[in-house]
Image (cartoon, rainbow, N blue to C red; front, top):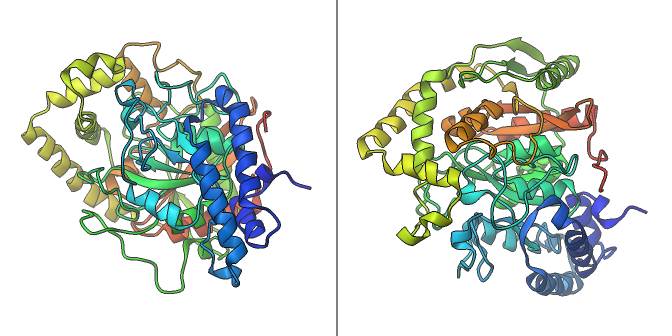
Amino acid sequence: MAQIHELTMIELAAAIRAGELSPVAVTDHYLRRTQEFNDQVGAFYTITADLAADQAKEAEKAVAAAEDKASLPPLAGVPIPIKDLNMVAGVRQTLGSKAFEANVPDTDDFVVVAIKRAGAVITGKTATPEFGLPCYTETQVGPPARTPWDLSRSAGGSSGGAAAAVAAGLAPAAQGSDGGGSVRIPSSVCGLFGIKPSRGRISEGPLMPDLAGLSVNGPLARTVADAALLLDVMTGNFPGDMYTQPPLPPGESFLGYASREPGRLRIGRTLQNPVEGAEVHPDCVAAYEDASALLASLGHEVEDVAMPLGADAVPFFETLWYSYATLAPIAPGQEEMLLPLTRYLRGRGLATGAADLVFAQAYLQAVTRAGVAALNAYDAILHPTVALPPRPVGWFDEVEPAENFERQKRFTPFTATYNVSGQPAVNVPLHWNADGLPIGVMLAGRMGDEATLISLSAQLEQARPWKDRHPPLW
């Protein structure tokens, strides 16, 4: 009989509704695994054992009292951890920074409201780099987030803790967020399916400003269907959101698309990227070519395309990124508590004038308009997710902050394009290299069309299943 952590999120939810598993037993199982493995993988900054126990007991009562089990919320009793960039009322929120180590918000982020409403049990806050800025998760708050496939290597970022938790079997799925690749990068290096939804699909409120619209919440999971259901749960807008997406038609769900054939699609592919000096490692090229061949074997039309965004766009994206680094309210005496990279990025941001910031946003919008028009000829675009296999822990920090930032750009030159455009994009875990490390590929879609990406990814998953492929500590 399968252990609890071997079940998918959907299987867990079904077993709980059927009375085959109790929310308390499920929660206890995940909390025990977290206590056993968290020091090794660095998945959680805060484990909310008491909160989770209370929520599990409430879920157990709700299941017992429900005459119609179909009326229960979709994730009743299912553990889902929250990234430590997001607020959970009464739970420490460090933002990955020593400066916020004692910060306890008194309200929930809107996406957390949605996850709670779905009946989920919150087992903790997952590790994130300081203010979510880097693509790796190594801070002074807790141990580095490591990919369970090789504990000497980083789990990526900024949803590194979320990915480590799911890949290590410490959670069936997790909430993350993606401002420059922060769901897709850790999904790639941890062997997971992750979705960066379209801009406006999920509310960033009540405090996180939309501003340039780079960041959006998204799910990380072991299967396409699990991620699709968690996306259904997280989806929605609140009054005051700058960016919104229309809801799916009545009766439709993202989970429904995970069991729907995509039809014959036109898929563009390219190894081009806008980051000068970024060389794509042979392992990542192999994953890309392998995925291309698999797509063609499934009947899709796969053709090479030119990437419409070039190196001219990168400095303007950097201007936005530097400015984002200034958002956290840091008192003058706290500046020295920040990591060197954070201080470097904030210094660049604080030196950016308002006119430069506005022009950067305007320039990116202008080039994006032409780029999106060109890419809309295709149902999906295929890239490598990252340009290098998972990096050793400490690799980014072994150099000065300016070179650290350059290394990050060369490691992940593909993902940020779709944060600029706002289009949905997913990481699909189809490939492992000769060292047993996961190497993902990215599929991007038309604005608002997560459905096609989900159907296509589910078809790939059916053709080459990855669900039961696990790291050694599993």
